[in-house]
View: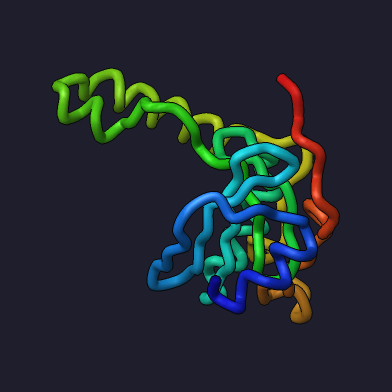
Length: 150
């Protein structure tokens, strides 16, 4: 196991559930959290760190639910099942795949009851507000969340 995973595995009492892999911006490892399939993601790029905060703010609406977040690590619900948009397209069902994509995009861009102000530049005109604020854990905290029931 990559040593970078160890603090998060211990913090959230995770059980490895597959082979870890990496992308140009993150380390990822399938895990089980409280018996549920999840994905541990450790961001290595600043953009990915901001992305984790955005996922917290989305609260699972059109995106994977964030189960826990701390510093560079984020624990996400893991997609399960055998449906695949790519496979739908390969099978000639482009229309269905596109419909699903459009529905997800609509959910992600739907108005929220509370805007995520730290992602956007302030337009108040103050010389102090013309830059992005440092991200905080205010949107989702660092404590693990219980799995939400539907």
